[in-house]
Length: 163
Image 1 (cartoon, one colour):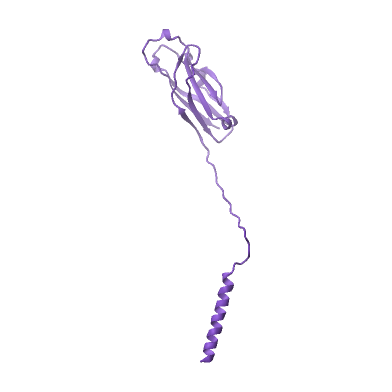
Image 2 (cartoon, rainbow, N blue to C red):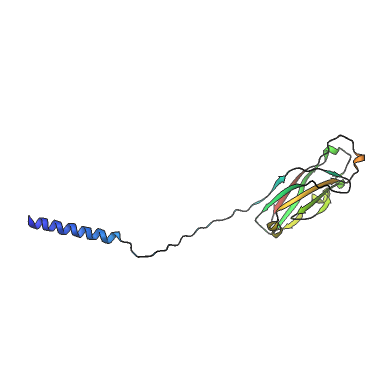
């Protein structure tokens, strides 16, 4: 019986020694490397930040400006244009060549509606520096040639294509 107790004590001590050895870390390193990675999805779009402005008449713009924000993180070129220009509130009193739009900000261009329906190329680096475009509009016709008290408006849709 003494041998059995003695064997049991030796077995218990051996088990504790084994547990103690396995509980210690394999090495004493104090650093560990962690890597984070991710991707950025391509974006191309336009956002109207100021969706309306006053329309000027004659050969000068007023100070009222609409504003759009260009969004592009891909390619080297952006094509910016007016995709639709609705002048139906003027009925047949004006033609598209009488409507002018001027941009300030990312690009500075002053041209008639027919020209704005064509693509204007903007460099990607210009958008990185400033992605806002102020838009001003005027109709090159004297106010005296229009009917008083009518509400004249020009509705436009502006688009960009990223390449």
